Amino acid sequence: MATYHNPLLLIDGYNIIGAWASLKKTRDRHGLEPARRELIEALVNYIAHSGYQAQVVFDSQYRKTPSSLEKHSPNLSIYFTAWAQTADTYIEKFCASFFHQKSPSQSRLIVATSDRDQRLTVVGYGAEWMSAQRLASEIDLSGHQIKRKQRPSKRSQGRFLFNCLDAKSQERLAQWRQGSY
Image 1 (tube, rainbow, N blue to C red):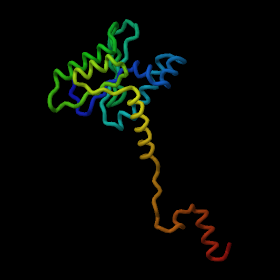
Image 2 (image 1 turned 90 degrees about the horizontal axis):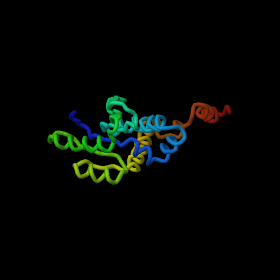
Image 3 (image 1 turned 45 degrees about the horizontal axis):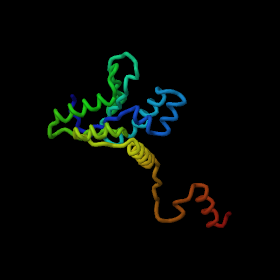
Image 4 (image 1 turned 45 degrees about the vertical axis):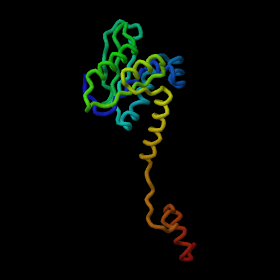
């Protein structure tokens, strides 16, 4: 198991898809793959902004495939469980292993799910819990903060109204002051 220096956010992917109205709508209209992509897209900026290491866990969904781990970005990975393993059992085993091997320098583990039984189990192992709704709220808030930081700030060029006007208005005002308007 890797040592994480940032808080680790473990996300029960299909549980989140089923809990968010927008993702549920995408799943029902277009299937699981588009809903997974939409969830991952929502997480990318949030994970980078929040400082979390994150892993989204998806069940194998009845496909006879081995488990797989895909690195989506430096801080976000996607894990598909092996055939017949649920995301719940993977998350529970991960939590048990994480806290069994935990050293004082290791960080926090947070599990995002709205599954009540899963919540009780992971909290019992010592993980923190985040509801699907709280994750959605934090992603929205993070998106607003990112947009605010990206907005160009108007630099004041002085305290006079003239400096706040666009170039055309400044020209008109200058002409008016000179009496040539």
